[in-house]
Image (cartoon, rainbow, N blue to C red):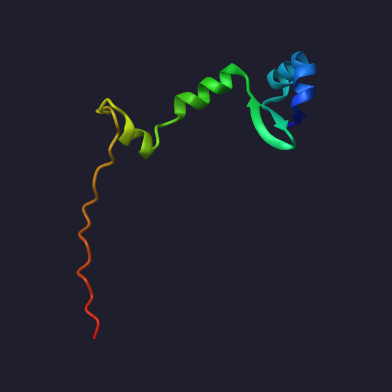
Length: 85
């Protein structure tokens, strides 16, 4: 992935866009630190379609999430606590 300083990204946006379409994601840096990534919309849609909300987002969501896939619980029992001594 090629890194573009923000000044170059602004000055050569059409080249940045073309590079993202032909070469893949392009990194934009600001003051030498990673700031953003330009990805083709097809890749963005694939990434967002596969994303699942995090635990915090689920807890803070004002609406319930009845469509969550909850894995089936195992059939194993817990081990009995071992007594020291």
